[in-house]
Amino acid sequence: MQIALAPMEGLVDNILRDVLTQVGGIDWCVTEFIRVCDRLLPAATFDKLAPELRQGAQTAAGVPLRVQLLGSDPVCLAENAVLACELGAPVIDLNFGCPAKTVNKSRGGAVLLKEPELLHAILREVRRAVPAHIPVTAKMRLGFDSPDGALDCALALAEGGAEQLVVHARTKVDGYKPPAHWEWVAKVQDVVKVPVYANGEVWTLEDWRRCREVSGVEDIMLGRGLVSRPDLARQIAAERDGVEFVPMDWHSLLPLIQDFWGQARAQMTPRQAPGRLKQWVAMLTRTYPEAVALFTELRRETDCDRVGQLIGIPVSAAA
Image 1 (cartoon, rainbow, N blue to C red):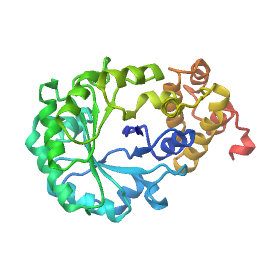
Image 2 (image 1 turned 90 degrees about the vertical axis):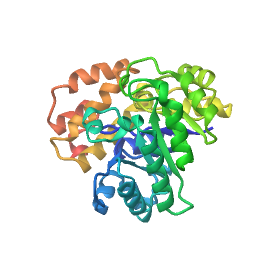
Image 3 (image 1 turned 30 degrees about the vertical axis):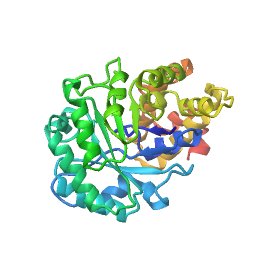
Image 4 (image 1 turned 180 degrees about the horizontal axis):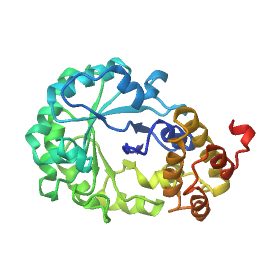
């Protein structure tokens, strides 16, 4: 059984990947999608979204990183996949699940689930192009506005060369509205011969138990649930391994928030950094009452020294 950290554009960047993988329980993670249009991207684009490639394609905690590409041109995706491999990507993942309107309008993400033949062509071309020892995987939703074509899409991806599928158990139109239709993950696994990961609406250990029961698959990809409960993967891994694990309290989480802030300050402008911290703290409010109070204090704060003070960092240490 494997536990993966989901790629979430604009949220799970290299900083949050670093912090969350420190907690443990995560077997692998994925970059935010790298958009491929009609040309070979410069290496700097990969370096920006996947700086871990400079450190062996893994986070500081040693968790492997996969590179995710998004686009609709089979040849162009293949060329960029080759470049990603040359830069050190150990796995190429292809995104057919992004529900964002701006992405779908430019023929990227979940809109391609309307075209199983194109899915197959993309996988076939990328699989042919990258070295044989580099796995090619794919992430999909159940469909654009209906799950009726989910099995055709899954078969197209698997038969095209995907060695693994992650199924977000909602359609594009569903967005992130509950429920997730885990029963469709079971249907996908029944028709493909490659491993299938369940994804969607797993916020707690109990959610994971129910997801496993309904979907029939062991492997799981965690997104918002893990961002809002940073030890969720540890909790699941502990149950998998038959060991005890005491869930993290706010006191245990605070050093991770401080680490996140330190990295954000080092990598972002003073104008950008507070917003990134607020984004994460806002998600933590789902799990931690203390985060609600912190977010209230942070909400309108833009001064970096003051932000540091609010999370327990003296001005002298933050400077």
